Amino acid sequence: MMNRSDQSALGTEARKTSSLGPELQAHIGRQLRSLYDEVLKEQVPDHLRELLAELENKSSGS
Amino acid sequence: MNPDADFKSDLLAAIPALRAFAASLCGRVEWSDDLVQETLVKAWANRNSFEPGSRMQAWLFTILRNEYYSEYRRRRHEVADPEGRIAARLTTHPAQDSHVAFREFQTALFKLPPIHREALILVGASGFSYEQAAAICNCAIGTMKSRVARARSKLGQLLPLEAHGTAGADEAIENIGQLVTAGADRGGGDC
Image (cartoon, rainbow over all chains, first blue to last red; front, top):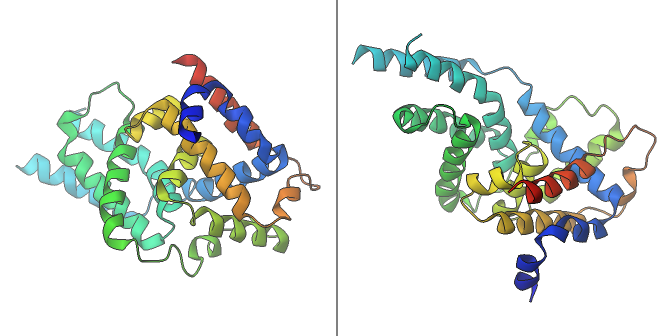
């Protein structure tokens, strides 16, 4: 039942979930983005830079 | 520039997004660093199969999630971020109230099945359309939409009741929820 309605009512999916309430939706969106963005804006760790350099060197050496 | 050097600088540019995806997907700092590392190694080994001009970030996210799920089978018994280390290192929540709300959110997020959590992250935080997210997860757009809807509704049930009112608090509301909804309409219309 649920699956069938999911398949047939794709266009209204977003509106259906608004039964969550706009405040809660906004809350979820904000929290999700702060979790994501906090890591996104961190500097690339040195070990990953070094890894890329190593991969490139290995390839050019072979 | 030789192709390898170009490829390397594209990989470097994609690392912040890969790390953000990995951290919000698996919730464990060490594991997410391992995932990114594995992803870079695999991407490098398969660099000849990457089609220039296609979206590298989506390609890399696909690799990362495949790594995640093959590891997940082995690690599923481990608890996500048991000590809340992701939350602990965050700096954007100076107010105690919002810090608590953030911890509660994380606890709820990591209770979701990963397939629902990733759907929410890809569409709600990474900025992919439903179509792109579906391609990354190798599923139909309709499946992606229903995963996002279920993830949100499940989160709504898991969050404490007071969270339902916090969006109306004093602070300015960015209303990302509406962006997510707009993304839903866009995803449906473009394809």
